[in-house]
Image 1 (cartoon, rainbow, N blue to C red):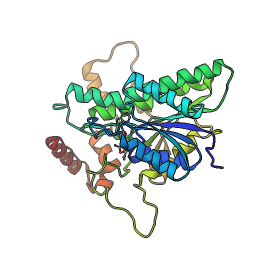
Image 2: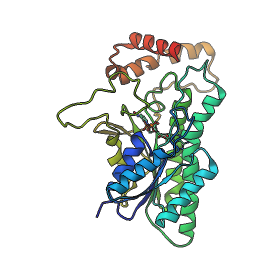
Image 3: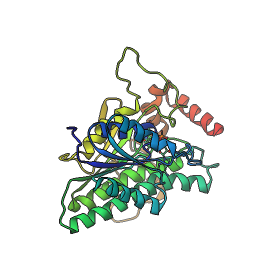
Image 4: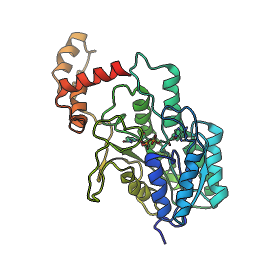
Length: 325
Ligand SMILES: NC(=O)c1ccc[n+]([C@@H]2O[C@H](COP(=O)([O-])OP(=O)(O)OC[C@H]3O[C@@H](n4cnc5c(N)ncnc54)[C@H](O)[C@@H]3O)[C@@H](O)[C@H]2O)c1
């Protein structure tokens, strides 16, 4: 018997990349899996219903249990239908993995209103919509006297948490909001027995990261590939498993490293009593604090992985990317 036998998990955006690897892993561990994916292009256009079904066929071919759903998480009614499908097909829903995303990367001056809205609709509103309908169902179960371990796993990104990336106004903002929403929902849903956590993958080889230098490099000799989409799946399986104690956590994953994030934390401060600060006092006192240069922070976090050295080289690379997109 697998460790997740008897659990039913809905994974959004499970037709490709990290979500697909999660669905395969969860099913191999014994879970019933709803594989949600409308099979859209990176920017959200188009659609291919065969994408979700292919993962379902793969799971069933290995003796697992799965059903396909091709709705969009950004559509309120379709988000409700995928929750209903899990219950109709498998009798219950124990966990939701909010993984779906699209990306439209452009500098602020060129990013359109529709491109901002589209990314926020899938990444942020989509996570809210599916969690909302799952929670409405879970509330009904509790009111009927059924108390079972339930879980939500959201998906954020370093672009939004540790190193928001230029050209990703929409994506970085939505991912930061997903992390904030994780904390809110962990606090709200504890009384229903629902744990809410968030994973934040990094440098995983999917269609989103194909343009990133070095992403195609993989170790040989059967060694573990730290960029394989499968590196996130065991953590997600743990977070949806019955008896997992974690809630309210945002966990960064890169290869085999898993780090607990602490969110925004208060740094150095200045104080004045009895009168408002003047502008010139602020100029003098704030500038004297140990402030972090955003290019320095980004270069430190990602420069090594991208083969770029120092903040100036990094700033030049960012400006070239802004001109390109
Ligand atoms: N690849 C990385 O290195 C990386 C880094 C940080 C965060 N992430 C996060 O991991 C998650 C998965 O990303 P990925 O790299 O596997 O991307 P991917 O593009 O390979 O997969 C995303 C899937 O989501 C689906 N999708 C898009 N719009 C949808 C909608 N409206 N409803 C349902 N599904 C929809 C797509 O069809 C696609 O199959 C995302 O949340 C992403 O932000 C990835």
